[in-house]
Amino acid sequence: MARIVQKYGGTSVGDVERIKKVAERVKATRDEGNELVVVVSARAGVTNELIARAKAVCAEPSERELDQLLSIGEQETCALTAMALHGLGVKAVSYTGAQAGIFTDKVHTKARIQTIDAKPIENDLKQGRVVIVAGFQGINEEGNVTTLGRGASDLSAVALSAALKADKCEIYTDVDGVYTADPRVVKNARKLAELSYDEMLELASSGSKVMQSRSVEFAKKFGVVFEVRSSFNHNPGTIVKEEVAYMEKVVVRGVAVDKDQVKVIVSNIVDKPGSAAKVFRALADATVMVDMIVQNVGRHGVANLTFTVPQTDTQRAVKALEPVLAEVGGGQVAVHENIAKLSVVGVGMKSHSGVAATLFQSLAAANINIELITTSEIKISVVVDRDRVDEAARVAHAAFGLDTL
Image (cartoon, rainbow, N blue to C red; front, side, top):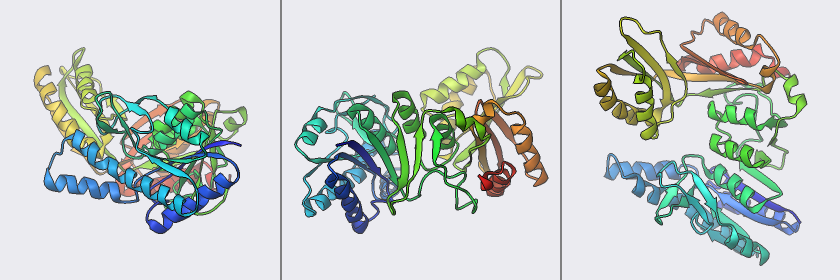
């Protein structure tokens, strides 16, 4: 008998018929003699609908109340999945995040998991029940419902896998696994059989929508091997695990595009020690996620800071910067929205040269201008015009021979 945690995303549970199909798959796994914990997302589109309703009644809804509202999407799916299993003769029980013992910090809409009390789930598993857990949510020490951020049902599944010492963690979505690029953008993208945690993390943080980046970080920290696969078929997926030596033979493993970015330019800020620190401390205190950062060389006592943030954090970032600029002696903030980030990722970059040259030459040949550049040990990211980023992805994919892997 194996202990398995399965997670089903929004499209996998998109309507009643899909929930029934998920229940049938869960029953088949349970009938093989396995212990099973199932984490579910809200039905596709439900979270966006709830956010729209919140903003219809209040332009800037309280984050506490927003969490209270958004958590019901997963709870609906959770209860319906348990009912579908009951209809198939399977003993099942549904849990909210709080009932599942998922305790978080006090931050609303982007809470972090602190501890998991798995005893209630363990007791139900011992009694032969399938446990269905509402993903994306937990509870803080004050008893308030918290949510973990968009796409965080993945995190719920990985965290429960670690807490329950599961033998397998399966992430079910609407694609067969992780591809060398988004197949909707790059038609000849290929599915990868395996990826390292670091590669998956960089792809996730660079715009790949297959996994939430925090869930990959958690998996790496606690050594949770997981498989990304489709709930619409029974094909093998992509296994994400610790890096092994042969992975370095392929220089670039994937190309990712992130269109959910804006470029923020803080210009004419006083060029003195501490100015940049105050800017980014204010952004951090406002829970704004800053990605790429470039600072120019100061001239005539002033300098410019350029960085990218998610589109959803734009107004929060601008609001957080206003008092800081007044404090440091002035400056202006400008937001440029028509940008996107293109990243190439691979652990093979550690031991191969010329990756940057190949990327830059291929984009130059296509007359695609680069606005910003950042690098890590296994990733190169560039900011380009949003209208041309899909073309840039196809160019980079071909330049590194990913269509012939």
